[in-house]
Length: 177
Image (cartoon, rainbow, N blue to C red):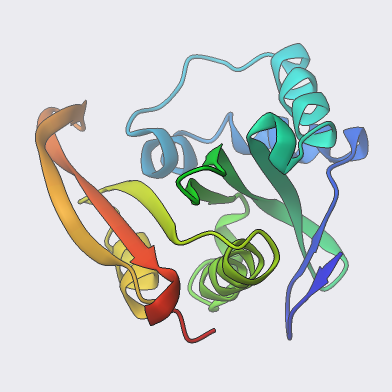
């Protein structure tokens, strides 16, 4: 378990499947995370994803943790594509309940995961992709120290038009925690 001021990162559990399944039925949450509303995600696929998270470890190239705030499961965060030779990984976070957004929980989660990546896994670089229209996420990542590296121009079609995807990264020497 990783303890922050308002957030805990814990191992995933199948008890989290109902909440996670409900979040992936919400079109706005899916648009911000995936770029478009998903067709209905099956409960079985959510359980399968959680089972993968339960078996995650740096050795298999994935570390996924559940995000808990005030005793409530609110999402998940992961480091995937872990490359221990080059000491890099891709970061992602999904916070489901709309009523918890804008409270700094995404920033705290990101800082906790970066601390784990740089100080426990000894990574050098953590990178991510984010849709340019997801301004709250871009602001969060920028505040946490990520720098924009590039743009995948008009890479996703959402809301009737094309949008850019940003590539951002942070290096261990600039992470301040």
